[in-house]
Amino acid sequence: MRAPAPSHCLNLIATAFVACSIAQSAGAAETTWKLNAWEPPFDYSRQPATIDYQPVVKAAKPWRICASYPHLKDSYWVSVNYGMVEQARSAGVKLTVVEAGGYPNLERQIEQIRTCSATADALIVGTVSYEGLTPTIKDIARRIPVIAAVNDIDDAGISAKSGVSWEEMGQSIGAYLARLHPAGTMPVSVAWFPGPKGAGWVKFVEAGFQRALKQSSAEIAAVKWGDTGVEIQLLLIEEMLEAQPDIDYIVGSAPTADAAVSILRAQGRANHVQVLADYFTHGTFREINRGKVVAAPTDSPPLQGRIAIDQAIRAIEGTLHYRHVGPPVEVIDRNNIQALDLERSLAPAWFKPTFDVQ
Picture 1 (cartoon, one colour):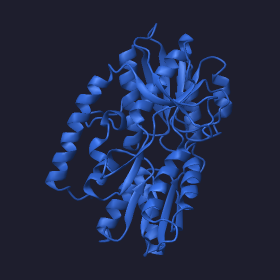
Picture 2: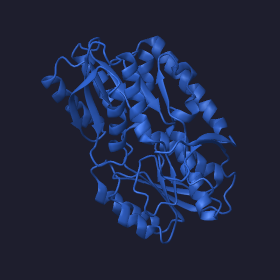
Picture 3: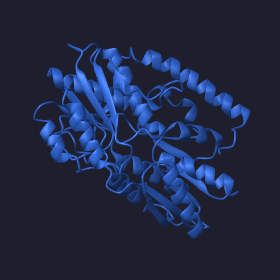
Picture 4: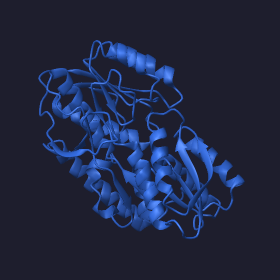
């Protein structure tokens, strides 16, 4: 079990999430988002332009939108869910959400989107696989627009994409580590937990992280692949620590970071092994504040959810102009966490996963 945080940390977290909730209530009325836009779309190798994006205030009709997630096992996808729910309510559209239960469940996600999209005007997909859904999506795209959200995916059949470059996410945390340990300094050993093989974001975050690490003295001593559920990450970290007891850093997904903090505390090694995450959740927010996680990049999951709903509405109504947009990536550590725009990065504490908006 996780030990209670010190009272001053709990007060800080509570205050921050109250502020977050207030800001997000006002956020529904926000009329302009500062975003990155890629042209041509779906090509992250090009430098994006910065745009002022104006979402639809009200949809022409209460369109029916189906959204499919890989899972709702961590607060990252709960934050995406929050953004979609709030934007659907604000714009006056209906939303049905399904979740596959984890990255190994490709066939379940295929079945879910076939069923859900049969009565929808648009489909939003956060995919469990980069190419595994392509035939199904191409078939669905003959009837309705398909929007890719968050996880990268093969472009075939996609009308638009709400996302960021996961290579940039991996590169940003790798570059942060390189700044701590530049090339030529004393070597440090890293245990790297990329995530589940085959997922639409993992190979990109892996490429970005590995490229950035070439500018550092860090050496990868262990690599552990696996689904992003905390239970699986706990097992992988325990295996790694048994085989590599002298590791200096654990780097991986937000659930990896959560699991690492728990295990390192239990083993009395919290002062000997440092932790970084390659994306940002409520857990990393809390642990960065407590000094237990060094840093993590935020890609603004609630805002990505809002964007995907707006793109779906525009695709249905024929007003889609920017086919590929996403928030800028920002690395958060103890030096800048107090200035973080919580409205864009985290669902408020009161929000629970919501599967239906009427």
